[in-house]
Amino acid sequence: MIALRQLLPAVAFLLLGAAPAGAEEIGSVSTVFKALGPNDKIVVEAFDDPKVAGVTCYLSRAKTGGIKGGIGLAEDTSDASIACRQVGPIRMEGSLKDGDVVFKKDTSLLFKTMQVVRFHDRKRDVLVYLVYSDKIIDGSPKNSVSAVAIEKNWKP
Image (tube, rainbow, N blue to C red):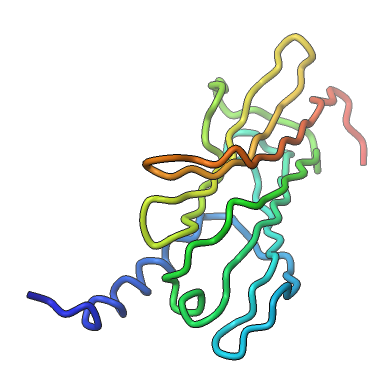
Protein backbone atom coordinates (compact mmCIF):
# COMPACT_ATOMS: atom_id res chain seq x y z
CA MET A 1 0.00 0.00 0.00
CA ILE A 2 1.29 3.43 -0.94
CA ALA A 3 2.00 5.75 2.00
CA LEU A 4 0.26 9.12 2.13
CA ARG A 5 3.58 10.96 2.14
CA GLN A 6 4.43 9.32 -1.19
CA LEU A 7 1.17 10.57 -2.72
CA LEU A 8 1.45 14.20 -1.53
CA PRO A 9 3.94 15.37 -4.21
CA ALA A 10 1.76 13.87 -6.97
CA VAL A 11 -1.41 15.42 -5.51
CA ALA A 12 0.30 18.83 -5.16
CA PHE A 13 1.44 18.64 -8.80
CA LEU A 14 -2.11 17.82 -9.96
CA LEU A 15 -3.57 20.68 -7.92
CA LEU A 16 -1.12 23.21 -9.31
CA GLY A 17 -1.96 22.06 -12.81
CA ALA A 18 -5.71 22.29 -12.15
CA ALA A 19 -5.93 26.06 -12.60
CA PRO A 20 -8.47 26.97 -15.28
CA ALA A 21 -7.07 28.04 -18.61
CA GLY A 22 -7.15 31.77 -19.12
CA ALA A 23 -7.48 32.74 -15.44
CA GLU A 24 -5.05 35.51 -14.57
CA GLU A 25 -4.32 36.61 -11.01
CA ILE A 26 -4.68 40.38 -10.84
CA GLY A 27 -3.67 40.73 -7.18
CA SER A 28 -4.35 39.68 -3.61
CA VAL A 29 -4.55 41.03 -0.07
CA SER A 30 -3.78 39.23 3.18
CA THR A 31 -6.66 38.86 5.62
CA VAL A 32 -5.24 36.62 8.37
CA PHE A 33 -1.59 36.29 9.41
CA LYS A 34 -0.29 32.73 9.60
CA ALA A 35 3.00 32.05 11.45
CA LEU A 36 3.61 28.95 9.34
CA GLY A 37 2.77 28.91 5.65
CA PRO A 38 1.14 31.62 3.56
CA ASN A 39 -1.44 34.00 5.02
CA ASP A 40 -5.16 33.65 4.34
CA LYS A 41 -6.02 36.09 1.56
CA ILE A 42 -8.51 37.37 -0.93
CA VAL A 43 -7.41 36.74 -4.51
CA VAL A 44 -8.67 38.71 -7.52
CA GLU A 45 -8.57 36.86 -10.84
CA ALA A 46 -9.69 37.81 -14.35
CA PHE A 47 -10.93 35.49 -17.06
CA ASP A 48 -12.49 35.96 -20.46
CA ASP A 49 -15.74 34.24 -21.35
CA PRO A 50 -14.64 31.40 -23.67
CA LYS A 51 -17.74 31.67 -25.91
CA VAL A 52 -18.34 35.43 -25.80
CA ALA A 53 -15.48 37.56 -27.08
CA GLY A 54 -15.48 41.04 -25.53
CA VAL A 55 -16.53 40.03 -21.99
CA THR A 56 -14.11 39.74 -19.07
CA CYS A 57 -15.12 38.71 -15.55
CA TYR A 58 -13.29 39.64 -12.35
CA LEU A 59 -13.65 37.15 -9.51
CA SER A 60 -12.61 37.78 -5.92
CA ARG A 61 -12.44 34.72 -3.69
CA ALA A 62 -11.10 33.61 -0.34
CA LYS A 63 -7.93 31.49 -0.29
CA THR A 64 -6.97 29.61 2.85
CA GLY A 65 -3.33 29.79 3.91
CA GLY A 66 -1.34 28.09 6.62
CA ILE A 67 0.57 24.86 6.16
CA LYS A 68 -2.38 23.02 4.60
CA GLY A 69 -3.13 25.92 2.27
CA GLY A 70 0.52 26.14 1.24
CA ILE A 71 0.55 22.55 0.02
CA GLY A 72 -2.97 22.56 -1.44
CA LEU A 73 -4.75 20.51 1.23
CA ALA A 74 -6.91 23.25 2.81
CA GLU A 75 -10.54 23.82 1.87
CA ASP A 76 -11.25 27.39 0.81
CA THR A 77 -14.44 29.04 2.05
CA SER A 78 -17.35 29.64 -0.33
CA ASP A 79 -16.98 33.42 -0.21
CA ALA A 80 -16.74 35.00 -3.66
CA SER A 81 -17.84 38.03 -5.64
CA ILE A 82 -17.96 38.64 -9.39
CA ALA A 83 -18.05 41.65 -11.71
CA CYS A 84 -18.21 41.15 -15.48
CA ARG A 85 -17.68 43.92 -18.01
CA GLN A 86 -17.79 44.47 -21.74
CA VAL A 87 -14.18 45.14 -22.76
CA GLY A 88 -14.62 45.07 -26.53
CA PRO A 89 -17.17 44.32 -29.22
CA ILE A 90 -19.27 41.31 -28.17
CA ARG A 91 -19.13 38.35 -30.53
CA MET A 92 -20.80 35.11 -29.56
CA GLU A 93 -19.12 31.96 -30.80
CA GLY A 94 -21.95 29.54 -31.51
CA SER A 95 -25.19 29.31 -29.59
CA LEU A 96 -25.22 29.93 -25.85
CA LYS A 97 -26.81 27.43 -23.50
CA ASP A 98 -28.17 28.74 -20.21
CA GLY A 99 -26.15 27.46 -17.27
CA ASP A 100 -22.94 26.87 -19.27
CA VAL A 101 -19.88 26.77 -17.01
CA VAL A 102 -17.48 29.52 -18.09
CA PHE A 103 -15.00 29.18 -15.19
CA LYS A 104 -14.29 26.46 -12.65
CA LYS A 105 -11.75 26.28 -9.83
CA ASP A 106 -11.14 23.49 -7.32
CA THR A 107 -11.35 24.94 -3.80
CA SER A 108 -10.46 21.80 -1.85
CA LEU A 109 -8.44 18.67 -2.40
CA LEU A 110 -11.58 16.72 -3.26
CA PHE A 111 -15.21 17.39 -4.08
CA LYS A 112 -15.52 21.21 -3.78
CA THR A 113 -15.43 23.68 -6.65
CA MET A 114 -16.19 27.33 -7.25
CA GLN A 115 -17.75 27.92 -10.62
CA VAL A 116 -19.18 30.65 -12.78
CA VAL A 117 -22.13 29.91 -15.04
CA ARG A 118 -23.66 32.11 -17.74
CA PHE A 119 -27.30 32.78 -18.63
CA HIS A 120 -28.63 34.82 -21.56
CA ASP A 121 -31.62 37.01 -20.69
CA ARG A 122 -32.92 37.15 -24.24
CA LYS A 123 -35.81 39.51 -23.43
CA ARG A 124 -33.38 42.23 -22.28
CA ASP A 125 -30.37 41.04 -24.35
CA VAL A 126 -28.19 40.76 -21.26
CA LEU A 127 -25.62 38.15 -20.23
CA VAL A 128 -25.88 37.17 -16.55
CA TYR A 129 -22.95 35.55 -14.73
CA LEU A 130 -23.43 33.68 -11.44
CA VAL A 131 -20.61 32.52 -9.16
CA TYR A 132 -21.29 29.84 -6.54
CA SER A 133 -19.58 27.01 -4.70
CA ASP A 134 -20.64 23.40 -4.64
CA LYS A 135 -19.72 20.12 -3.04
CA ILE A 136 -20.72 16.61 -4.00
CA ILE A 137 -22.91 16.29 -0.89
CA ASP A 138 -24.04 19.86 -0.22
CA GLY A 139 -23.39 23.21 -1.84
CA SER A 140 -23.36 26.68 -0.39
CA PRO A 141 -26.07 29.31 -0.81
CA LYS A 142 -23.34 31.99 -0.95
CA ASN A 143 -23.31 33.47 -4.44
CA SER A 144 -22.83 36.63 -6.43
CA VAL A 145 -24.20 37.77 -9.77
CA SER A 146 -23.13 40.23 -12.47
CA ALA A 147 -24.79 41.30 -15.73
CA VAL A 148 -23.45 42.62 -19.02
CA ALA A 149 -25.78 44.37 -21.47
CA ILE A 150 -24.96 43.42 -25.04
CA GLU A 151 -24.10 46.77 -26.60
CA LYS A 152 -24.58 46.63 -30.37
CA ASN A 153 -22.49 49.73 -31.17
CA TRP A 154 -19.90 49.49 -28.42
CA LYS A 155 -17.24 52.18 -28.22
CA PRO A 156 -14.57 52.41 -25.50
